[in-house]
Image 1 (cartoon, rainbow, N blue to C red):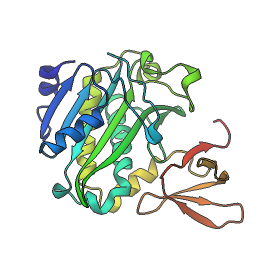
Image 2: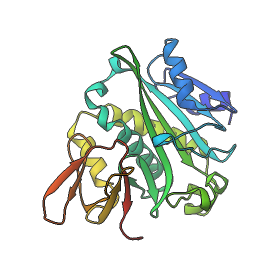
Image 3: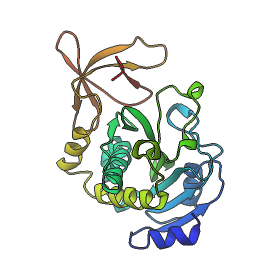
Image 4: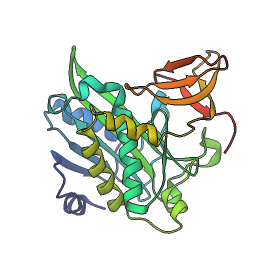
Length: 263
């Protein structure tokens, strides 16, 4: 992969700009810098290797060279209704990955609320949505996506807090990173334009992992919450049915979801 090949692959997509780097600290941090310099809507930053990639709660995202996809997309608020749907942006990225993998390799991935994509119950993708503000004005939303493509992209077991896999191991052959990013971005742009429509939440709910199953919600030192997954509400909040049959909703924040038992 290089700048020219990436531009050729994505030529039919309405991207604002495309920046490719062999090695960066974090594509999300670069996206913020570009936003401050006036980068247009749908500016794309792709890195072959990240040395300071991160996920939710500041956890490190493992991105070695040549075997993963690490990219960020800059979404300008004046081009979309997204400011009214901030809680759905992480789901937008996850749904785009899920649909993109289905179209490219017929994979039936699931979305683990709020920001992971699973194949065979194991994590293959993480999404990190960050808002870039100047004062009280929202300048841009940065949607960072990391996808495990080849086996070298999967961290060693001792570094994992949730089981992980990669696309190549699931399909049993080498896969094309360019085909994946083109398919994911095509779906991201398509679903971004539908984020305010009921069909968006219908699709997210349809592919939600652990529906009907009992899960635990973990949040720092707070007591563990246990309940059965009902689905998501219209804002992307998780609905659990508690032991007393009461239904409660939860914002993502620093909550981490874990299945009660392995599948």
